[in-house]
Each structure stands twice: as structure tokens, then as C-alpha cells.
Length: 353
Image (cartoon, rainbow, N blue to C red; front, side, top):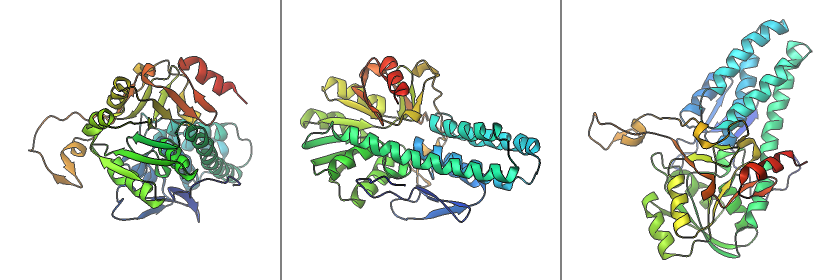
């Protein structure tokens, strides 16, 4: 990899000694522990329970999980191998339904397998090569995305973000948080206002860990403090990531993002989405077609396993919400900044060389 990144890569996910090694994000920020495995089901479990999360990161994890699954198949004939591999790949792709990068990466692995004409041994090596390419491609996309996004941040700025969209959510650089960190690396004087991101506190736990790691100034606040902060302070921009973007620009992201976009509109604050084009699902016309994952009630009623509500209550647990395209000032990708109407501008980026 010859990319000269502006910030050090976060060790989110790597391939080492025929195993996947990933940082266990459920342990952060108090412990830095790693999961190292040659079992694809362990990676699937890590994706499901958010030990690895963030759309680009779980795409890479899904690709490597496909390699692990392939390596465990002992069938020698190609047809028999493909039958077993496709079932396992579908299992991996179904681990989380909202983030499109996972399905995008698994689809690439399936396409490689189905079009291959060599031996099973050669196919397994080809799948590993493709997984490496997907990881390297993610770093390249996020690097270019970071450069485009950093241009939107003034020399002296207050910016806001929700959920973790840094290196932990990708192969090492990040999307929205990567934009902010690239601006800081360029010498801009900025401060990041970090929404804690209930219910699992990805902002409080993960953004603070990442920002502190490379000395980017920040302040932590609860999600409900966003409106007051916008009212009392000049916020120059809000930067968020995406788990899936529909063809028209409607964007699914961590629950609370939609609320932030509505507040930004009221307070005349530019609201930007940052994501690689691999997060755009051109087959979905609008956000109405994006499935929203429902999580366990324990994620709302417990923190670190400790119950802080009464038992036996109804709990609403959508992991994501969908922000309408008209509330989004721009969508930052590796190709530049798409503008409303997004059906045309995102299609132009897709078709650009």
C-alpha cells in the first residue's frame, strides 16, 4: 500500500498468520483487547455483537470471514466447494441487515467464486487476494474522502458528530471522523463536539478514544445537549457517517442522526454525510426501502450488563434512523462532494472514472 495517510491507521482489522485479528470495540476505551481467529462464525458473532462495527469495517470483516469459511471447506471439486461456500457466504452477509457494505463485500466474494475456473486451492488464494484488495480499497477511499471533506472545514472551526465514524469504523482512517481528523492534521484549529450516542455510547467510548489518540481537541456531551449547543455556539458543520445511502440520498445512520439533521436545519448549520460510494445502494430508490435493524432491549436498559431500569418494560430499540435527503447539505465520497438532488449527483460520481 503506497497511500500516504495524514493520520496513523487504527488497527481495526488485519489478516495475520491465516487468521483475522480485530480490536474488540466492546472493551474500549478501558481495555484494548484483540480477537484473533480462524473461524468465520467468530467473526460473524463479532459483527453481530458490535465487537467490530461501522459499515466499511464490517464489509472488510465480511470479506475476511468468507476467506475463513472457504479455508474450512474440505471438498476438492469446484462445484461441491461452491455449493458449500455460497451457503456460508449468505450466512455472513445476513449478520447485520442495514449496513450495505457487508452485503457489497460478500457479493464481491461470491462473484469471484462463481466466475472462477481454476482449482479449489487456487480459488481460496484468489479469495484472500480479493479480501486484501477490499481492505486496501477502503483505506484509499477513506483517504480521498478525508481530503475532500477537510476542504469544507474552515481554519477555525467548531464541528459536531454522532456515533463513531473514525478508524475503528473502517480499515483505519474513518469517514466523518476521518474528515475531521484530516482537517486537524492539516493544521486547522478546530474543536469536535462529540455526541455520546445512546444507547451503546459509541461517541463517548470510541470517538473520545480515537480523538485523544491523535490529540484532536474535543468535548463530550449527551445527545440531548445538541440543540442547546447549536443555539449558544457557532457550529460550522455537522459531520456524520452512513450505514446505507439510497439512490436518492436518504441516509440510514446511527439512531439520533435524523434528530441532529432536523436541529441543524433549524439552526442553519451545514449537515454533511461522509461515506464511500460502496455505502450507496443504487438499487434502493429511497430510504423507505432500507431495513432498520432492531436490537436487544438490554442495550437500552443496561450499561455494561448493569440493569438501571425496572424489569419487564416495553423498549423501542431501532439501531438506525433514516435522514431525508433534503436535510443533507452534501454527501462526501471519495469522488468529491455530491449535492442535492442526489439521484443525479451520486449517479454522476458512480459513473466517473
